[in-house]
Image 1 (cartoon, rainbow, N blue to C red):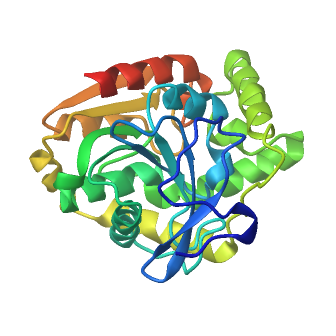
Image 2 (image 1 turned 60 degrees about the vertical axis):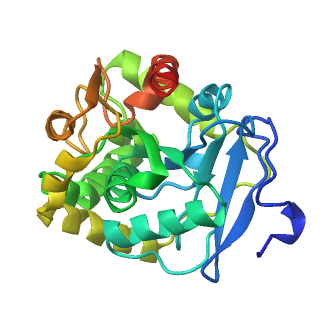
Length: 293
């Protein structure tokens, strides 16, 4: 097992700390160090968080992580090539899912719950189809089933948001994750403020190579015709999105829930791709109730 010199701890050691205090560790996954953090109690089924396009450990909202960690062992991970993890980011959701499964096994976790956001939600869908024995319950936020239109346009949407953000002196996530209304933009300011609260041991930003690989994976996902396999997913699934998602169209959440045998659908008002962050208190309550059932 490979550990950073400044953060040497057992891969099975968990402390009840906050998101902003959690130490970044690494675990050896087939010869590659994967960076991860843990928050919450040591008992119960762990909840593994799988992140969005370009997302790293520091892009998870502390309000969401700490809220969920009040009742669950929460595990955040940078998959291969992302952030502080080693290796090269694969260019398919299937390969990302294989890496996530290997990570779960490397931590010695016999079963997990999954929370997949955006690209991470696609990875979660692939994990449960490949290894249903590893997964108890799933939360899918701002994501789509394979074959739905939208993921292939992600890079264009990102570039447009960056241009507008530059012109208006704002962060691109104001436009990528939130609606243009005053209430949603105020929520964006609050969310970005929470992301800046962690000052020590911050993660590494994604590289252009990782962005390129993830864009390719998203485009492949849109062309994929394997979503029929969702009919065989019998784990309970909570599907969440905002009512105006400009990154992964909100209709995809309806389509996703429709294809899953045991799904609940929750659409939050006046919000976009980052609805789980804008309505973080409601989201945490819903997820805790869902996982408790």
